[in-house]
Image (cartoon, rainbow, N blue to C red; front, side, top):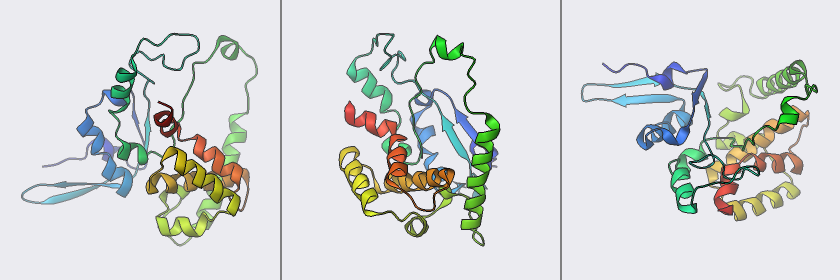
Length: 223
């Protein structure tokens, strides 16, 4: 009898996968359906069962097998072929379903020892709650509650952009080769950035920032 696995147990929560390329490829590929549909369907000869699986996937990986590719303070010992094989363990269709991928550089001592705490968490919380409130009002009466849940038709309605944004998107698509799914994800991220900024319309700065959050797409082009 099929039982809920880790994906369904993370429903309405967070599923964190550390060292993402170390997972078996077939295990990663089956994440595509729940990430897209918010549910897992298991078919057997006698019956077919569907479990809920609307989750936030958070994953971490090294830039290369040795972990030092792009590090200004350490020399990478990996060959280009090794780096390519390592990154190819994460398929393009799976990456397409991840809204944001960013590179996190090593933290230097002066930042670790600094007494400057940066922006208070309470200020960040207030900004996030304001943006979530805007999204609840935007989707009132519908069965979704956040920008990430928008379907293509809703993206056209709520993520309309001006000519300057279109030019920026066209340039990014030509250079980075975004798929239709990647294009829609950039628009949804830009909509969220605009909400955090308190802006009614998506501006070119919001589109530019959203494109920067596709670091693995940019890495594939540069490599």
